[in-house]
Image (cartoon, rainbow, N blue to C red; front, side):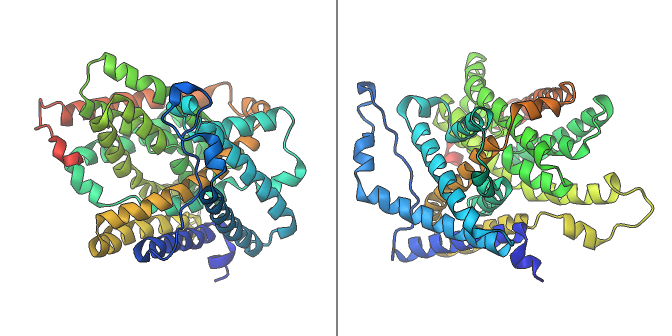
Length: 443
């Protein structure tokens, strides 16, 4: 029973639930402001006269009030988690303060007018962390705060509240066909290609990279990696490769789609099904237009629902087939032990938002709550991405690439993913086979 409060997976559920509960109370009662701190877009040059000056933001009491709320909330919750895990609080607290400051710098840099137009904060979190780890090195006293999985798991539970099952109804069979049929096929293809063609022995890395490629990058990698017992170094490799190619696809895929003359609806659906990061999906879709942005977000939202199901089936598959020689029967207990418990929090949060909060208080209130939660999710993720950068050494990655096979696995898998998603998008949204959904679906 002590696992319920001592294990990281369950702690992510409780910490995420606490943040969601506070946000719901704050929004539904209007008793207090629980908004997290963020930088509005700023610029030093005159070409962006419409943005909020950085000096004005830093001079605002509202900014520092939100800063304190964010820091105290996350600091207290993660410190409690580390304490219950048996960690040393005296070492964690100063390390977490330093990590939070670095993350604040990441948010500051990523909000700059020019940088913000092309690359999201996840890229800058990774880059700044990598610069530190591969130049001056990470000081020993900072390492107690580098808890990548803890931050991401908590962020995923919070993210669950935004994954509304009503999105399936909005896009109907179109979204299901693109997101739910293509994704499992891509995972199976990458598993076959990685284990049979490339003959990679590291099967947890293969399935983790396959999930990252086909679903939603880091989030799927964490969930699937936990189910497959993927090593920390292998998880870092999968996430790093996913982020690097996400950036490339986010920039170049809208250009190629536009050059091909594809409609916004088809282009947005293609982006939603192939670009890994949800944030990158929004930016890439926006580059094509408002209809493309909304189509991309809907497809990606429907795809995100698969995270829990994939983690569940991977846990069963690895427990019964990959790691079982057949000498003994694997029972439900072993599968339950392997299953990532934070996925339960993800599903429960989604169910509460979809079937409790939304029917009772309405969609506007759910949107208002998600507006608050989105920043806390982002803060958990920026802490995680910065930690990934700090914990990643290029020399070590080069040693684990197995002659470039891991990179080839991603490239071939992603090309297959793009081709299959394009086929599904054409089949469902071109108007040749089915009637094209009207724009009202996306309002």
